[in-house]
Image (cartoon, rainbow, N blue to C red; front, top):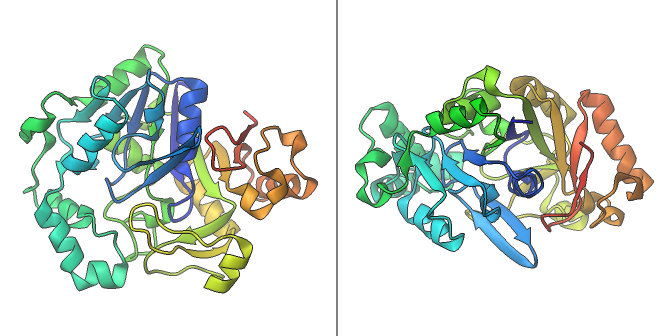
Length: 333
């Protein structure tokens, strides 16, 4: 898989960070490159008893030999990025495209003060929407204009395409989820740009024929934060009883929950041209598979759940998350 794109299949919060971190450790890619919106997406990784949260760097940051790139379509919060570079000791392998947009305090202030964005839509308040609005108006500051980023700036599209031309492995990380896409999600309860696989590839500057595989990541159930429809939504009490009560990694807001939605999943597979699937948090639904790393050792009901998903969706589930720890994965590739 020289070029694998990973995207979320529902409303974000599917566990993409864990899947990308696992792939980075297992496949040792030369490059991990992040597309998507910006620091409004948080990816959480648990490794050797420690928890890591990433909002700017790719979730492959724990692999010290992987170069970490941020595509031109991504918005950058300078303080968040520099802190993560320091945390992961990644100053000699982090590169930001010169045309990344920069989030400034004025964008954050606007995001938090606008009733429509914060109140009705339920945005994260991280400034990404107003920053992308300014980008559309062609007034947004670019990474190339920021002295603190001068050591990290490069042409990310060139770097990724060059790596692929030389048969290197590239891991492309999307953010948010398919149904938060500005174009394909439940408008207006969406993020400020397209976040399907096509949009992610555009963010980093690779054409569709460069992609070898698209992995769509689903959680074993559905969650979302903020406003917008959620079919078959269950109550907070029921979510707590099932172990589905979760909180957002960026805002700490409670996530709303519902059972796995096959209709949404089918459309997500079409929108993203999925060639394989990952299903995370299966251990929440089936505690007997917690920490299991071989398919044959999973309980029969958990295996049937995966087989039902494959049968209904027509795409193989190649990775199954069975716990919070990075290596708690059943790898069926």
